[in-house]
Length: 86
Image (cartoon, rainbow, N blue to C red; front, side, top):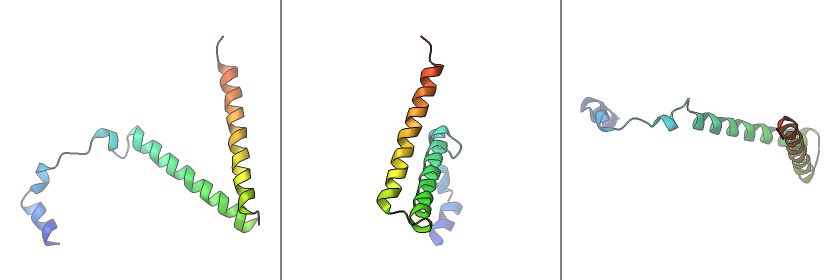
C-alpha cells in the first residue's frame, strides 16, 4: 500500500510510457484475441455438454468437433470458390 501511495505522490507514474495502440483494449489485435478466447470457451462448454449431458465419450466429442471443422472448411472453400473471379 505504501509503495502505491509513494508511486502516486512522488509522481513516478509520469516516467511510465503509455501502452501502445496495438495493445489497447479496443485494438484489432486485442479484439481478435478476445474473439479467439470466446471461441475456445464456447468449444470447452460444447465439449462439456456433449460429454456430461449427452453421455458421448470424449473421443466422440473430439470426432464431432473434427467433423465440424472439416465441414466448415469445405463450406468456406465452396463459398470462396463461388465468389472468386476467373
